Structures are given as structure tokens and as C-alpha cells.
Amino acid sequence: MAHQVSEAARLREITSTQILDTTANPAPLGLLGFGMTTVLLNLHNAGLFGLDTMILGMGIFYGGLAQIIAGVMEWKKKNTFGTTAFTSYGLFWLTLVALIVLPKMGWGDAPSKAALAAYLFMWGLFTCVMFVGTLKLNRALQFVFASLTVLFWLLALGDATGITAITRIAGIEGIICGLSAIYTGLAQVLNEVYGRTALPLGAVK
Image 1 (cartoon, one colour):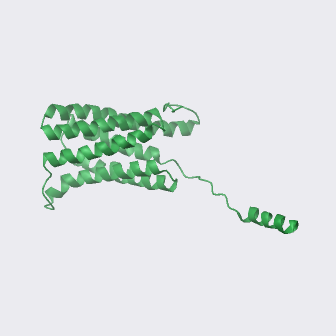
Image 2 (cartoon, helix red, strand yellow):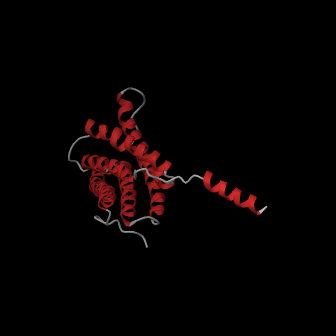
Image 3 (tube, one colour):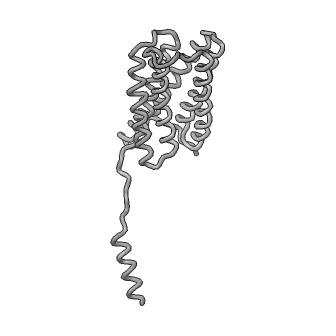
């Protein structure tokens, strides 16, 4: 009987498979896609240039598709937060482009200022809840999500009131938010390449 038990244990050991995660970290791709597109859009919001195909192209491909790809990769890593964040914000950029392009194609009416304010407010609410999740992560991500929450709500307030100065202030704040995401993404890349903390992220103790 003892021989049979030991034999069964040996067979389980032989047939068991340990799966090691050897895939790359997708977070820098998502953070850079978000950050660079956010900086460019908010240079527009700050009044430095118009809303042209440069921003729309970034919104579709780097802010949109790149973040969705990062979200799918986070799903494979079983990272619910990363999957939800990157996929959602990737689709945010695609919906934002759609709001601008679809009326020009005759596929619907352009949204009113009140509708845009509601749209931006809901994204701010989503981001605020996601910020709570970053309290278990690191200080750099906390800053990205906190500043993004403020950005969405400032933009919503600007559309709701029609006060251009609020949108300009939101543009400046959005540039800071985007740069913080770029820093967080590049920090993860450089820290991995150098095998040490080249750029600190502020780990939560």
C-alpha cells in the first residue's frame, strides 16, 4: 500500500507542469501611449494649437490601440487593475476621436457642451475610483490617477460653464498629468534594463 502511495506521488510530480511567466511588462506601453497622447491633446486645450489630425492620429493608434494591446497583455498576466485601466482608457481615446469625426462624416449630430460635460464627468468618476486602487500600488501611479481625475473634472466644468479660462487651466494640468504618466512608464523601462532603481516610483510600504 505504501509503495502504491509513493508511486502515485512520484507520478504526480512527474506529470505536474509549472508555468512560468516570461512575458514582458506591458505597463510602460500603456502608460506611454496614454501619457504622450494626453500631453499633445492638452497642449491644444491650453491654446497652443488647433485640434488636427496629429492629435486624432495619436488618439486612434498610440492612445487607443496601444493601450488596448497593453490591456490584453495585462489580462494574460491576470492583472485586473491593469486590464481595466489600459483597455478603458484606450477605448476612451477611440470614443473621443469618434465624437469629433462621426459628425463630420454625417453619422450623427455633434455632442452639445452639456453632453460633453457629462461624458467627461463620468470618465472622471471612473478615474477617481481607479485612483483608490493605486493606493495599494506606488506613488507615481497615485499621482497619475489623481491628476487625471482632476483633469477630467476640470474639462467637464469648462464645457458645462463655457468658461475658456477653465479649459486653459485644465490644459496645463493635463500636460502635467501626461508627463507624469510618461515618467512612470519610462521609469519602469529603465529600472528593468538597469536592474536597479534608476528612476524612483515611490513604493508603498
